[in-house]
Length: 377
Image: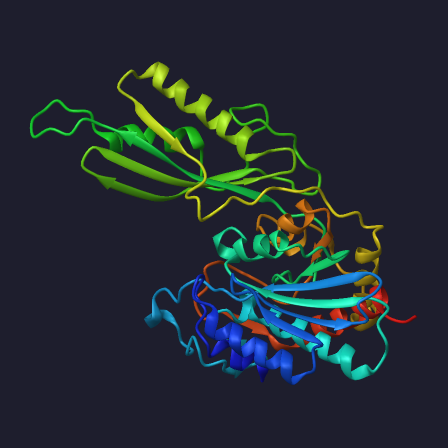
């Protein structure tokens, strides 16, 4: 019922305030000790003793757009349940995660069992904008010992994820009403060819420097995501999924060298490289894997086994190739992993949906993992 309510409230990235107020009301209703909305619009609540280890359960509130509304067979804001699935924009990515962390916290509170540490629940904004909400939480001084990000990971234990570097290549031509002239569209085609096929594995030892990562086979990968043209300028927007060891600076150097190579072969090729896409949309770095031996990973694995009776997939999991706010929490020295409900067959997704039983399973696992990490005296 809570998830249906969340789905009914639009929350495009940058416009999450109404949803944040609903989440805050729920936190007050279930008895969180402290509840607040910070300057960025993140909603944060706390349960616990104020002593001992601290666990953060994190989910983002923002969604992408509906897209072609006529292609949906269910109301994007209806929260309809059919054949065991709940439908709606954001149901999968990731309002189900919001519902799971809220109800896991409520289960812990209702149990009456004392916590030796703090359980912090954070529902953040603008994950799709580079994790701006999570970065603001960290800038405000939040430093839990452990963090679980409830991205739609099909109940896999995600110890590692890729990062991304996004940017633009502007190619300049010579605009005339007579010929010959330099056509930037044709010149931009050379860039696309140099990048290679969209989201196919980039060969090791080529133009891009990286060390293949055993948990992220087939990465890095890259694609041109958008093309714009006006008069004498064609702009390509690209998305490069990177592995640990690669940085925004190393990618910038490699791309600059690649583009200069094109220019060396074609004196009429003029370009500008822009990274990141904008100052308001930071890139997401790639971090090393959380050790499977860590108390956090062991607690989640044990809880999953207790609830489902089987061992979860551990590693990059279902979300291989996708990014998450885990990179920011890891960058602050926090032990962090991904665990959440939802299988994503394709994205963006018409008739976005999530299996209801997965939400219930995730909630139970999160509650038990919380008990395993910070429960008891």
